[in-house]
Amino acid sequence: MWAAVIAATSAKVGILWDISWHRSIGRDTFWTPAHMAIYLGGVLAGLSCGWVVLKTTFAGTSDERAAAVTFWGFRGPLGAWVCIWGAFAMITSAPFDNWWHNAYGLDVKVLSPPHVILALGIWAVQLGALFMVLSLQNRTPERETSRLHGLLAAYLVAILLQNATTVAIEQLGFPNDAHNALYYKVAAGVLPLLLVAVGRAVRLPWPATTAAGVYIAFSLLTIWILQLAPATPKLAPVFNPVTHMVPPPFPLLLVVPAAAIDLLLRRAGRNRDWILSVAAGLAFLAVFCVVQWFFTEFLLTPHARNFFFGGDQWDYSSRLGPWRYEFWRIASDPVTARGLAIAAALAIVAARLGLWWGNWMQGLRR
Image (cartoon, rainbow, N blue to C red; front, side, top):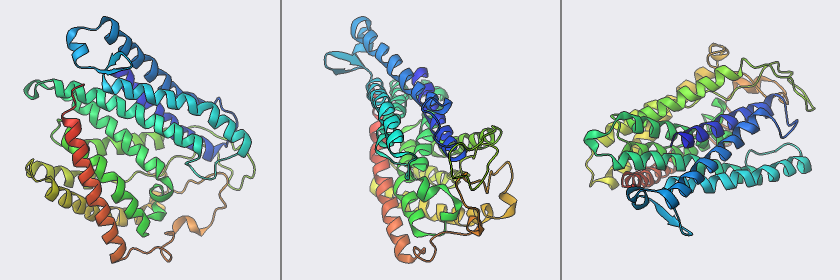
């Protein structure tokens, strides 16, 4: 379990580091420290979970074998199998990614074909670690459960929230996007699923709020640490001569809508999931809209251009101009009643899927 959690963390740190590397230095070699951190996560997850499968198959106790999933005659926890599959995908993506960059240069978009394979592998490793933690939590009687498994599960969901905002960085990443409709549609279609699922499945007093708080803390540590590292662009053209690593944008303030979801989950009964999904989806969207609308206005002011918030730091290839302090696409994609209605429908669907997934994870024992 601990090896899987460390592997999930290493892969996520490596991804954030690698994005900053591309924005600050450019593509110089495959053998960067950021890449090594990513693939260390895959190797660690694959080897540790492979050992668990072999041990369970050939030397496991009767209880361990009973709590295992059989695949091709081998036995192991479901989470271990998911980690192994993710590790294979990650390792497979490495030579593909290296060839892609040699053939086509820099990625125009975040989701190039090798990055999609890598992202799927990373998601699998992190989900596998989450399943391992939850199966241990669920096999422990509720009155005897320590908070360790709940905190580890919330931590892993925080990493999944990081994944979601990283994949959607072109829609959710920058505060300049927060006054267009697509920003709220993407957020509503993805984030309630994770927050509602952790709220239902994890044994903590405020599970969604805890996961959102860890997501923000993880993001802030990344912002603060990366700004300390010197960097020099190595790939032309250089329009913005940065001197230090460019950090990721300031995280979404998900702790506020997450608290609203936790309150609803605590008050609602177990047999009212359809009503709860409507209430949770609408609550998430309403609170998220208010918080992000006004907080992103602050992030575009001079008060956010400091070490703490890490604002106004751009790629070395960016031609700096007044666009940095403006909201983007508000004329072509304004926030309208129709756009918010679509976002509300997406949030309700995401919340319902989150309840289904949370119920499944609540019963996970293998």
